[in-house]
Image (cartoon, rainbow, N blue to C red; front, side):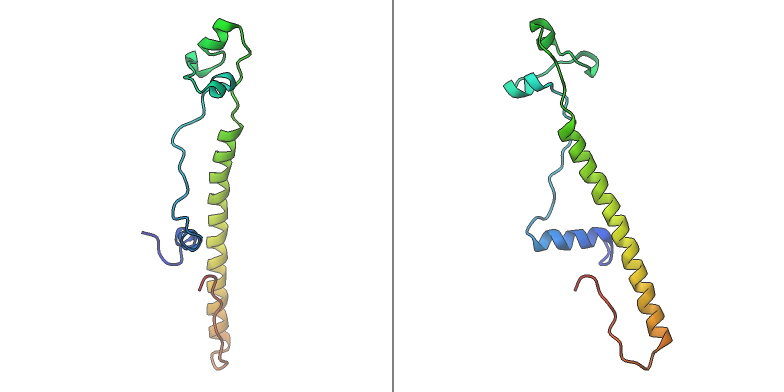
Length: 116
């Protein structure tokens, strides 16, 4: 379970706020060629490389469009990077708040919070 100040907890709080508790998970790679995907039929590629058996038999151009898969993978990488940066920022803010409290304890001061 994530701690209240962890990046995962911050992300969950935002998802709760917007009504989206969990992002969709893609569990498999896109492996069908463009022609088979268009017809929504099973694409059989020996050794996972084009051409597929259908395109080879019909002498069609067999290409696999990996752009959607790359977008999904890049999204995961981006989210991980942002969570790390957010965690570093939260740690720096805590340090600043602690330093401010020790420098001038007689001055009333309200610490900065990221998410209230």
